[in-house]
Length: 157
Image 1 (cartoon, rainbow, N blue to C red):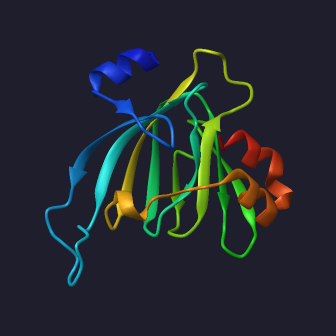
Image 2: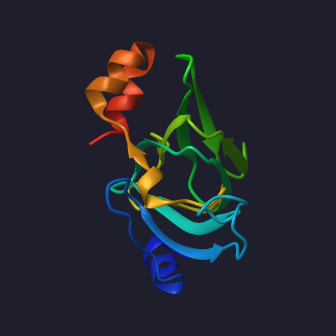
């Protein structure tokens, strides 16, 4: 399948702010004790050359599971100033954890063709909540993580 077929088959919608296409397909029925949050949620998520996942962070852990498509690069920037790039594809990592509080963004690998895409399942523990989503600001991230400037510039709008 190509990106358009996956978008149609899974009824994916554009993801405002972050980028890419998504559909939430699961929310755990039970709430965390003493909280409005559910235990977990999960989405289908797709990126293309034109729709990367912009730098953002959540307080919850995210688990990415590569389903199909082309290789991607995920940048993770931790609160202590360190960073790491993960390559998700069949020949490398097929699953990656993003700990809560870590900045992360993802795009297709530089050598990907123009019609490339990557399709994932993403689960968030506890569940994703809009009010907890923080979109990264280019100047602030470049100032805090100068060694990662070129990657940050590719992963911010």
